[in-house]
Image 1: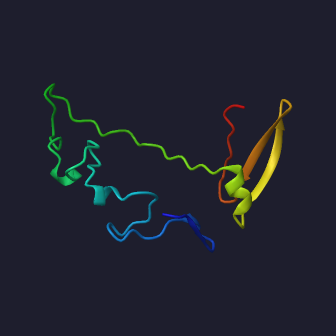
Image 2 (image 1 turned 180 degrees about the vertical axis):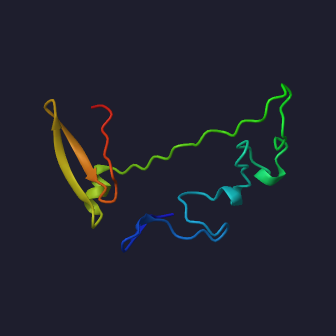
Amino acid sequence: FQQSRGPSEGYSYPVCTTCGRRHPGECRRAAGTCFKCGQTGHLQKDCKKNTTASTSGQADKKPGASGRVFAITEDHATKTSGTITGTLFIYGHAVFLLFDTSATHSVISSV
């Protein structure tokens, strides 16, 4: 899927024809990937791990949230209309910046 930008809604993705949601990449529902255990071939509602207690007697823990990363190259950013780019110098090193105008924070972890 390609990312599109609508007025005043920030970045969004086209509506998936399989699940009806907006998301990047391949649809997990179409691939038959379980959201509970991450295995393919069944959906969460049919997952064998849908038990109230594990063998140790403790309740099953939900998997932690997975992060998402979006990346773009400097070349692609400069060829895309509507992008705001810049150069920041950190300890004498030029760092390419792509400004996300809808973000509340920007973080640079290391050079």
